[in-house]
Length: 365
Ligand SMILES: [Zn+2]
Image (cartoon, rainbow, N blue to C red; front, top):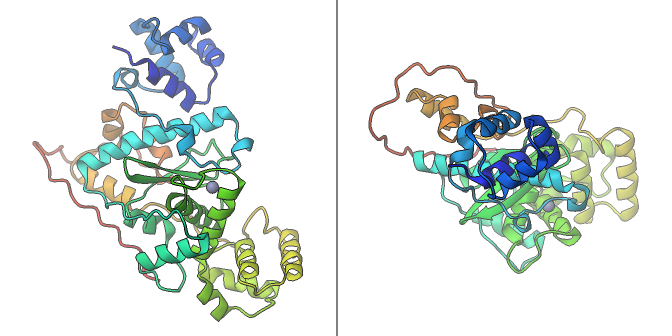
């Protein structure tokens, strides 16, 4: 039995049009459309050709229906600039990540979600409320990915092919998900993670999820979350010079631009000083990149999962096989931690194994 929606999902995952996939598989566009719409069932041989063209195992197309991630559930930054095809590719990746997460949840006790949702307060107060709930104090925020994971957010990396998407997030069955682009600087990654946390906390309830206002709110939340007002005011002088900003950005592990923006927000830079500093930083290359940046933050949960699985003789390729996914699909979610398809040394243990509890310890600062 073929699940027609899976043909469409895999095609959208590869960002292919009907016409292009039909050409690649050597079938007519009308036939492909009939398969996707469940008007006709493809023969085994045709299904194998489609599977081959899409680089998905044939078994992928015979599994149960996948729960899609609806477009209104996802806050894409600059949605208008991201083509519909790219948005669908990214949402299909997310739908497969949810499947992977369900598999993880069946094998491990993952951290419970403890992300609050606030409809009313300003982004600045919302950030303070989350920091206080998570007992972060008034100093720099630890590793953002570990912090989110410790609070039950499932954090995955975005496929490198989708560079124009910075990050996005959504709630699914009371589980928060965040997807991060790993091609940006480490500082940018931290800011994106905090920005998406802002969406999870503030949006999707009575406030709109997307649009320029939601983006401004999420950015304001991220700045306040990463650079607490009291800490910034205590450490930075009024009218800080560019060299002072470049030195201080490592305290909060943020970009020079983000710190400059924050200094302006907390009234340590005047409008004029802010604009002059931004111009100077742009000349020095800090608008598009982060010279001498920090390393990208990555998942703490995923390497733990694969270490434990390997000890039980479960290789990543076996996990991919159980999920009917190509190994490359799992790897694309894992921050380039690259789990190779080597054979496990041990035998898979017979019978059931207890679901080990996976604890995430955020790094102390
Ligand atoms: Zn956003």
